[in-house]
Amino acid sequence: MKKEDKDIEIRFENGHVPRRQNQSNIANTAERTARGKKKSKDAKEPGKFKRKWKNLKKWQRVLIIVVAVILLLAIVSCALVFGIWGGFKKNVNKNNLGVSDDIANKYGKTDIVNIALFGVDTRDKDSFSGRSDSIMIVSIDKAKNDVKLISVLRDSYVAIDGHGNQKITHAYAYGGAELAIKTLNQNFNMNITDYATINFYKLAEAIDILGGIDIEITEDERLELNNIGDDDNPNFQCVEKSGMVHLTGEQASVYSRIRKRDSDNARVDRQKKVIECLIDKARNISPAKYADLVKAGMELCETSMSVSEVLSFAPMLSNEITIETTVVPGDGDNAVGGIYDGAWVWRYDLAAAADRIHLFIYGEVPETTASSKKKPESQSTTKSSKSSSSTTKSSGSSNGGLKNNNSAATSAKHSSGNNSETTTKPQTTAEATVNNETTKEHTTAETKTTTASDETKSAA
View 1 (cartoon, rainbow, N blue to C red):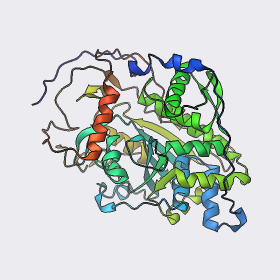
View 2 (tube, one colour):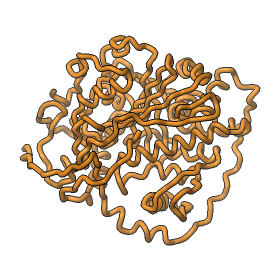
View 3 (cartoon, rainbow, N blue to C red):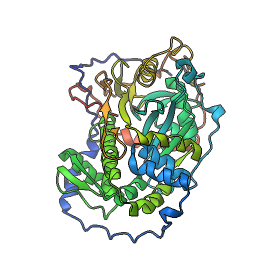
View 4 (cartoon, one colour):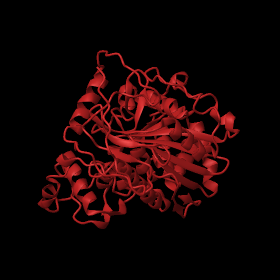
């Protein structure tokens, strides 16, 4: 039976994005960190991976340099490069990815390659399953030496082929990278055929090899960082102060996963800060650490890209690389956030978001963008120099257009285009797991309408 829609007054001022609250995770956070400084974990024994640089093949050296020089392709390169060398290459059925009809040729820009980047937050360090905690489209223009990062918020309410309309983060849990790529292609009219997935828990080891990172954190972030870290590991070394601090790999990994204290938008910004810090570290990495970094990278990720595909990016290292970032949803997407069908989601105009992504990547939008989009069955309708400098700029599209409707009053299920009824069917194991996790996540969500008053930074 469909639920009746209820009109809810939403106040929205000056492009401010509301903070998302979750009271159950705030109540005892400070108390958890009052235990004082805990003893640092024993240093790990040096790895046995001692393959000499001079004995590496040429393509292997290039892969290492790619990561060492530009950790943008860290999350692309460390993922792509080391995943390949470590035997983590995974095949996807490219005939089942919902690829839009030859987008590159429509724009006449065949040098632009779009890759999906996923980050999973599984406690199993050897696993790449579960919900995707981070979702990005990495667009690489090899002709112009440009890299553009589009962050898609995990709570985006989209159509997932065969599973109805849900949070986009669930697609990876239901069907792995293949279904997650298909979901991006079908909802945003993209032509993505390759991906890289990073396990955030393994990212900590790579950060430690680089010597940790120096980053500025707020008091709220410090409290939540310690709260999450303490839950994950009884021997977690708490961060004792806010401001500019030095974080270990484990602390930095936890920092990049903070979400419940503020919003997905803020988490994307934190992940961006970590990447920028890693780029700075990678610029000065000692050759003596290459082998250890490779070993960590071998376990860090999996990818669908081949060695030759990764090597095609190597010439970019000889010139300056410009990095631009944006976030979806953003300005012009008419986004409204709130409780919907029992879960907190961002609902927005997917066609408008698709046009904005195309404009960001290609500088133009084809007339056929909205009409040619392939719908899922369930949906009815850092400027970085050669080796010494890196800066990152954000595009004009921020989350200024987002609104918050955090209400317990839920309405009928909508697809991004038209309303549609979905047929009830038995849950798969993945669906049952996702639904159980979603129920726990939103049990204590606020049920009153929230005034949109908090201003967010432009996220990437």
